[in-house]
Image (cartoon, rainbow, N blue to C red; front, side, top):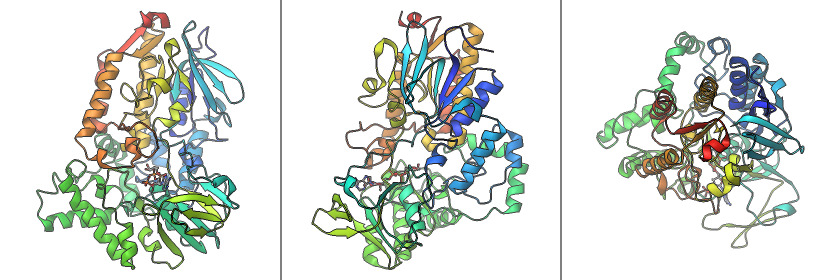
Length: 545
Ligand code: NA7
């Protein structure tokens, strides 16, 4: 096959989630390359392997949040719900792993701890926590965007007598019924967990710092008529998805909330609210993310809904965000979230005005000395998003330059996929790509396809190494940052989109905000123009010249 003389493998890929499964299938089965994969988990699934907390569910309709590359698969697979819950998505990925026989290419239970470019040999040296080193010509990270949970920052947490559970690292079934539970965090994970756990806990204490704008997901069992209709025009739907900002086939967005009369506006908001999913966020008015006044109309609408749904006015007030625009933090979708607070057993605790001081052996103590007691502490405190998974692999590029040093002031990439100084390295759904604002399986397919094409191009032209130029990277970083300035995103104080959820993390936008279609057009253009912005050479030394 394509095995080279010097490297053990053609491609090493990290992660056995959506990216790794499709990556192995593409590189190994479609291209005949020698591929080795690693995953720290003991099986496939990625995000859907680790996030097994109660209530975990996808926020994009499953017919759209799924692989598009295999027409047979998408015809055969049946989703039982409009928005599948975690177990069903994990079943799907297991099915795909079997179907494309990818497990044999993976070493599970193995974490990559160092990735270094060998300049002499012009290949990557990949070291695992088992102490083994493997080499490959190309390194592909499918390590994800939201896969490194934020380090708990609560003094005394090691002294808590009960269990401490992390939503993002929740591997077994924990019996929470009849227990007293404390949960920190009301992002997408917290909101899903709270809605579910509130129904079974003896008592639930929700420690909220920044309230969120949650809107209904609108889930229901799959309607067979709808399913048949979708499957009859699946190719068309996929194309429409790829031509949409968020990678979903929505087409009802109105130009401006401010151009509409109050009545028209309400009609649109009511309609999108009732349809559910990201319709309200992305398919209502086109200026919500860019114009504060337009945004206010959506925010007001959501606050009104919260007041209608939550019986106690003081609790409703506390649940209503006021100090940042809607959508500048990733908007959560919910099922019965606000109703959870109408249950006498669910208590909302404001830890903005009265911050968490410490975890005690029996619970939490706030700054004013108030103590809360519970049996289980759940951390739904988020992730070191986008950059965290790459930095965690301790990457060293040409000239001994580390990724950590290169990114000390924020990520520097070309196309959110490659980095100058890191030849033959590809970061699937990397920072400064649109992926976290794009339907993730489609974003992943686009990136894996780009990488496969790039490798084929190199082989065809006899190039051994490929690297983004410093100039192309500079322009990409500048464009990514400039696009952000046209949005309201910088106005949120704690959004992971901006790196603002992690103390000390550089405050830089982590997502390309030009939208998926524009991004895809740029990537296509790069490829059509002989990989504009990339340098090619026969050896690593040739790049340095
Ligand atoms: P998020 O959206 O980052 O939410 C984390 C939550 O945890 C958020 O409410 C934070 O409040 C809260 N948090 C974090 N640290 C603290 C401390 N120290 N004290 C109090 N509260 C804290 O993470 P999720 O896992 O919910 O969602 C991540 C993505 O997964 C989601 O966006 C989807 O794309 C899927 P804060 O806002 O910082 O005040």
